[in-house]
Length: 351
Ligand SMILES: C[S@@+](CC[C@H](N)C(=O)[O-])C[C@H]1O[C@@H](n2cnc3c(N)ncnc32)[C@H](O)[C@@H]1O
Ligand SMILES: COc1ccc(-c2cc(=O)c3c(O)c(O)c(O)cc3o2)cc1
Image (cartoon, rainbow, N blue to C red; front, top):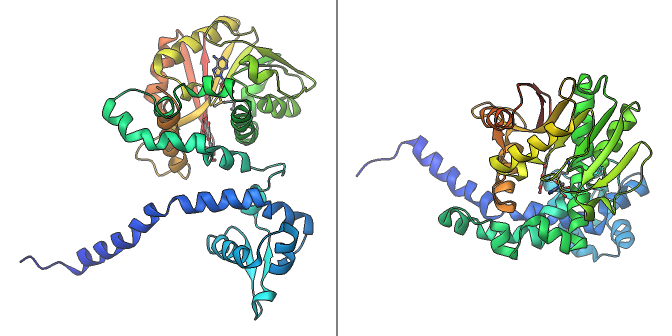
């Protein structure tokens, strides 16, 4: 019989511990969703300082004993700060930067993204992923819901709002990152069409920072008809597979990753038709998968690729070689890539 080395025994013991991370992986998501729905972060923010368990449970209208257990778990995950000075009644809970992002109504809140990904509609396709892999093709979202995500959203206003709110909160972060790290991308631009621009949050962030730009927010009719008005931005409803409104620059953020190469090439061609041949450009703000590189955003990019696998038919996150293929096939003569300190990179393609 082969005798195991101490290292082998240690690795096996570690595996016995690690497996619980996978079996219990849904718990942090469920608890963060619960914290958002209870508006724990909002109540702590309004209160200002630390709150005791009786104060917090009475403000939230929650059972103190259940809230105590929820808060103990969230504290263990580092989601908020807890200080204790003896008995249970003297436990004090206070705000952290992470909890502030989980406010339902905060300016930099990302809670809508958690509410979208943890919704039963978005969770159902994950149960179809192995059948998708075995059948090699059919979309997991379609297997779960009988139609693709965009058809589903146009027939379900509540889910469309969930998607738009989630995309809006991360669009604001993504656009701010581009403006902070690569403002040159927007120099000398008179007009910009945001293709698949959602509720216009990206353009609102852009025209606030670059008020000389006239923005055209272009998306499906059911999306733009509920988009809030903003000076300097015109909302246009339509289909990017048919025609894209004309502008100096066409901008695509987190849109192409929803589609397969064939569709990306069609969308990029429509964008190329929309811009001036001599001075125009298409800006693509998307993740670039960098295999083998230990970048702090790699985990998010690879996770996003799994989201595309679960929620779209042919969507995927792309390596730079895969981006080069679609950009060249759409007829652009050259492109540049700017990696910024964010999940997304900025690819500029010239006609
Ligand atoms: C993942 S969201 C990205 C939204 C936004 N660009 C952002 O960064 O948050 C993709 C957007 O593409 C839009 N879309 C899907 N099909 C479209 C089509 N055929 N024409 C125009 N927009 C479309 C969706 O309605 C959605 O708003
Ligand atoms: C920094 O953490 C994050 C960055 C980005 C995202 C994210 C980006 C998307 O484009 C995206 C998306 O298109 C989508 O359909 C979705 O369901 C989630 C999503 O997340 C998340 C976290």
